[in-house]
Image 1 (cartoon, rainbow, N blue to C red):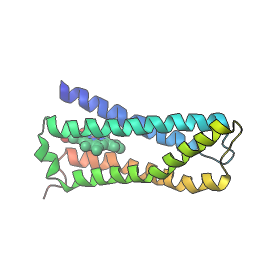
Image 2 (cartoon, rainbow, N blue to C red):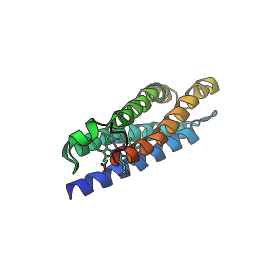
Image 3 (cartoon, helix red, strand yellow):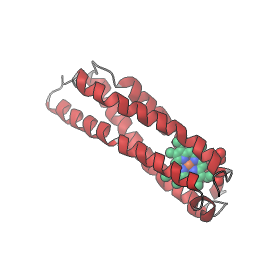
Image 4 (cartoon, rainbow, N blue to C red):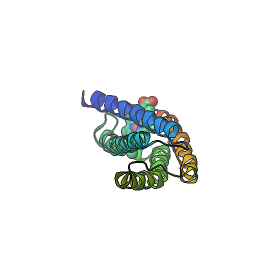
Length: 150
Ligand code: HEM
């Protein structure tokens, strides 16, 4: 039962992160209105919490899942999955810091909108996050079936 609950939560968090990243990508466009910037900041907070959540649930599944921790830790594809997830996290640092800084500016000036150049600088990072994130379920499906074991 615990394995089933953890697996369900894991999947829900995956879909949440995918949806949030796609929304952020769609919203982050030149001419970002103050209300949209506030929404973007809320979405980014949901992204951060969900990423933390999947990290906890994911390692919970490794430690307490039905297959035992060694099934995963001995598989290089598991570590590739973790590495890609870490890379997505690293790529998200700059957008998150920028969004927080813009929100601070917005608090001081209700009409503040980020420059088009600032926004354009973040879009490739978000796209890279989305593309790398899409690779993780493929690695997960392989890892879950023991593909990658020497
Ligand atoms: C550090 C974070 C993560 C850890 C430690 C982790 C760990 C795990 C574990 C232990 C399983 C169970 C595999 C099995 O049934 O034997 C699993 C399944 C899965 N994970 Fe993760 N995961 C993490 C993050 C993610 C992320 C970010 C995604 C999506 C982008 C993801 C997608 C999946 C999918 C789709 C499955 C089901 C695979 C299948 O049964 O075919 N995981 N994960």
